[in-house]
Image 1 (tube, one colour):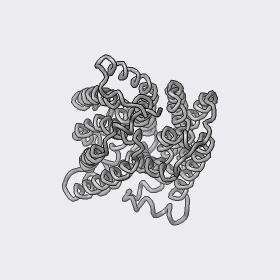
Image 2: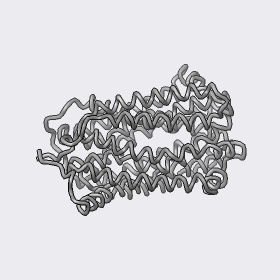
Image 3: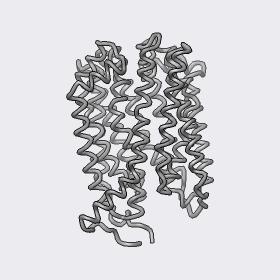
Image 4: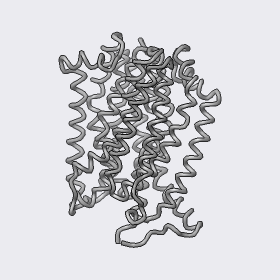
Length: 433
C-alpha cells in the first residue's frame, strides 16, 4: 500500500481540489436539477382542484417514499465499495431485488385491507387527508424499482470516473416529470395522484438513459467479496438517516401546534432546503472514490471548506431576503396563513445544507476506510436525537414548523459529532498498490 500525499505542496493540493471538483460537479449538477423536481410538482399540485389538501398528502406520501427508497438509494456507495469484490452482475441482481422489495413495501400501506385504513391514522394525519394519502402512495408504487436501477447505474459510472452522463440523464428526468405533471393537470386527474405519477415516470426516463450510457462499461468480474447484505445494511442505515427525517418530522408536525398550516407549508420548505442538500447526496461517494484513488484527505478537507462557506452564503441570501417569500408564496402558491408561519422559521433551516457538506466529507472518510461500522452508530445517534428533540418540542407551544426545523438541525449536529470520532483515516485512505 502506498503512502498518502497528505503533506503535498499547496499548488498540488489545489490541483487535487480541481480534480475532485471535476468528478463531483456533474453529479451535483444532476442532483441540483433533480432537487427542483419536487418543488415543480408541488407547485403544479397546489394549483389543481383541492390543491392544499393534495399538497399536504404529497408531503406525507413523499415522507414514506423516502424511507422505503433508502436501501435503493444506498446502492451507489455500495457499488463503489464492493464492485471489485462482488462483480457487476451480482450487484445488478441485488439492485433488482432491492427495488422490487421497495415496490412491495409501498403497496402494503397503500392497498392492503386493514393496513391501508389504519396507517394514515398511525401517522396522525387528519381524517380528511386519508384517502388522498393512500392514492398518493399508490401512485408511487413503481418508483422504488426505477430508483434502485438508477442508483446501481450511478455507482457503476462513478466507480469508472465517468459522471457526465448523470447530469444529462437528470435533465431528461426533469423534463419528463414536468411534462407528465402538466399533462395530468390538463387532463384533470386526481391531484393526489399527479405527483406520484409524474415523479415515477421521470425516474424511469432517467434510468433508461443511464442504462444506455453504462453499456460502454465492461462488466466487472467478481473477486473475493465480503458479505454483501451486511455492507448494504450498514450503508443503508446512513441513507435511511437521510430519508427518515421527512417521515419523523411529518409525525412531529401532526402532533404540534398549528398542525394543519404546518402540514401544508412543510413540503414546500423541505423542498427549498433540499435544493441545497440534494446536490451533496453523492459527495460522500465521490469523495470516497477520490480518496481510494489518491489517498489525500487534505484535498477533500479543503474542498469541503470551500463548499461549506458557499452554502452558508447562499442560504443566508435566500432566508434573509424576499427570495424566500417569492418561492413560498408566488412560485409554490402556498396560502397566506401557512406561508407566513413557514417564513417565520425558515432561517433555522438555512444551516442544514452547510452541515450536510461537513457530514458528507466525514462519511467519505469512513467509506474509503471500509470502516462502515461507524455509519450505523452515527445513524442511531442521529435518529435518537431527532426523535427525542421532536417529542420534547411537541410538548411546547411552538408550531410544528419550528419543532421540525429545530429537530432536524440538532440531530444533524449529533451525527457530525459521532462521525468525527471515527478512527484515523491515514492508512485506510491510501490507494491500493
